[in-house]
Length: 216
Image (cartoon, rainbow, N blue to C red; front, side):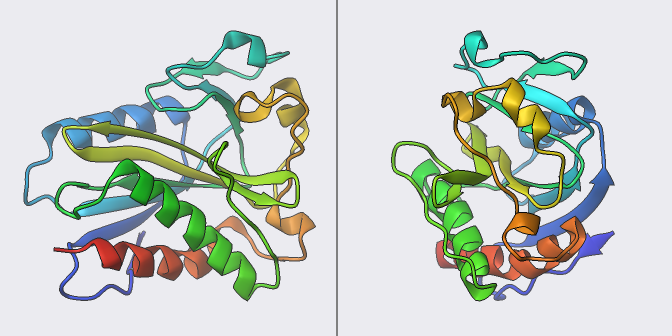
């Protein structure tokens, strides 16, 4: 069901929808189709959802970082970045934005996504940071959120994966985001007792507030 964001009237329209648990490939194709067919008046969208277990490899991913996928499907996709894992208990936030209309570059979008999570965590008593050499959000050395984006016709899709309360074991089957031995954590291990939907609702205003700085 739609989640109403709190955004300024002056900012470009933003529609936020919670899609629930959805298979990866159909949602990916829907993102591509939306981006290909949207016009200059189309409202920007944020899709909040979870996926069944799947490994995805970005356009420049090295397959040697996929160590032992076992029975988990592997999908080659058109985002940046290396290999990552998605599964139930992880919040996906796909950001389908007209970057030109927002006068926003890819680096700006990466900063918005990272800093919105970092600020939300700080308000929940957790200190986190970003890394210049590896996009995402980290608590000490452990990765909490991964980013992967694609821009076509000046518009973005794909987005953010935030670990909430999931089985982290499949991350041991890969080198997360191409980094051997990188530890992975989740909000449930950091003292934040919330469901995926609760995290989405609490974090969303932080995202919207930062996006407002890139309005018309």
